[in-house]
Image 1 (cartoon, one colour):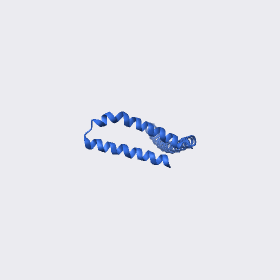
Image 2 (tube, rainbow, N blue to C red):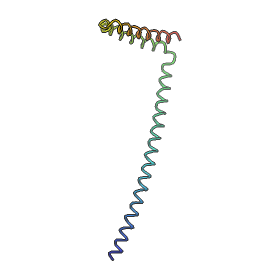
Image 3 (cartoon, rainbow, N blue to C red):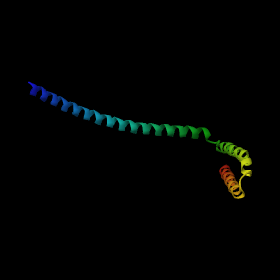
Length: 111
């Protein structure tokens, strides 16, 4: 009787282990599917947002670039006091960066 009970218990344990392995495999498959679907959804969302933004700014590119340029220029003016305190080489490098930034904006506006 005890042997029979032990055999039944062993069968039950083996069956449970197999069931647990199946469940783990299914769980892994679900995780992978979820990750793939999440990625697809995020790509669709990104694409939709990009389309909406593109649609809203169409024809207003120059105006938007001008606003960005103005904001950059305001930042440059605000930082100018800090620039005056720099050493001559650092000051020159920073001025070159500013000049390059302004040149990029000019090119964008002319396009």
